[in-house]
Length: 232
Ligand SMILES: NC(=O)c1ccc[n+]([C@@H]2O[C@H](COP(=O)([O-])OP(=O)(O)OC[C@H]3O[C@@H](n4cnc5c(N)ncnc54)[C@H](OP(=O)(O)O)[C@@H]3O)[C@@H](O)[C@H]2O)c1
Image (cartoon, rainbow, N blue to C red):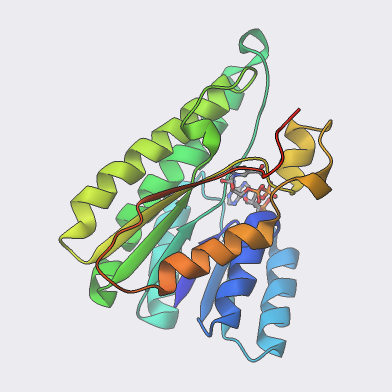
């Protein structure tokens, strides 16, 4: 049973579809009720179990309610995919406090709150898996992306520490750091790029399936994906 945040579109939607194809029951969350309902119907029509949960993950209380609702509906959680994120891209002087606060609230604080809220359910699953969608921007600095980059560096730091902290509790934590991926967010950040040349959401979904289904002793803690062709 897997929970995918930010499943209403983009990378999260592709991850939810791919996990359902592997036979996982799905809890899907985002703010857009219509898009979530449509995805749940689509997954169910293919025989999957899928339950939509509308939540604004900037709201700490909403995350607590989500954890309780998922526990009540499914009674377990094997995989938590922290994918929901927001992108605001601007030079330093044009970066408002509101932009900074929203980036931190959704990209850094929400994954912390979700990991904390769901860790008991993941421990019960043992092995449980957390997949955090960070970014190459969480590893390197890019001009015009200081606030977004800070939020993703925070997520990478959280994720790296939890990889070590939860290992002994049979909860594996993976950090995925993609480059530009063909979604609404990329179209907003890099209107100059052809989405057809970018990483495709299904390629990240395939990696998530690989990470959460593989067994063995090796822990793949962080994976970086870049566009095969050089960026202009
Ligand atoms: N696209 C890229 O180039 C790229 C590269 C590297 C990393 N990433 C990361 O990958 C993740 C997914 O990105 P994407 O490109 O698929 O973005 P996207 O197409 O903009 O989708 C973002 C998702 O997050 C949800 N979301 C936004 N605000 C939310 C809120 N306040 N509460 C709950 N859910 C919220 C959205 O749903 P609602 O609007 O319905 O709430 C949507 O499902 C993000 O963490 C992003 O930073 C993206």
